[in-house]
Image 1 (cartoon, rainbow, N blue to C red):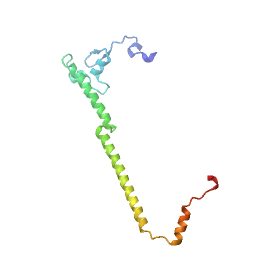
Image 2: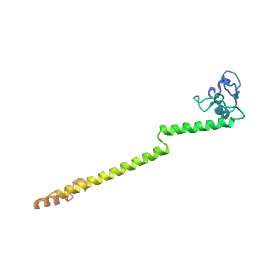
Image 3: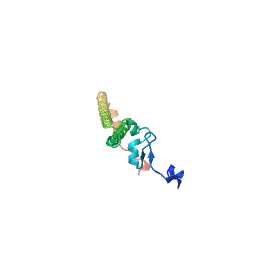
Image 4: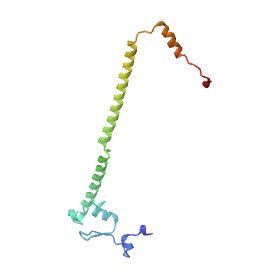
Length: 142
């Protein structure tokens, strides 16, 4: 079961925690290590941002919380999922629906105007039109 072993155990050493090579402090819990190092390798360790341990340890924890909130907000902005983006998308959708409705109204008005401009049909044509509207039965429909 190599997958569950730490690097230290693979090399025959006991796991003692995570040691910062800047300040030399060892962190035995995941929470304390992530507070010091940050949640990924792109964060600056707490010892480099001049946090005095003991006196300002709470500031380091608050800093990491703010960094996480900032990262989440950047993620939302890049995915266009902030409240403003969602509201804008909703407004754009409503605008498209309103445009489509108005376009359909204009088209219907144009059809009505076209029908009103047609001359009345000759007397013989109305019989032909009436015959076309009758339903014809086909052998396959019986």
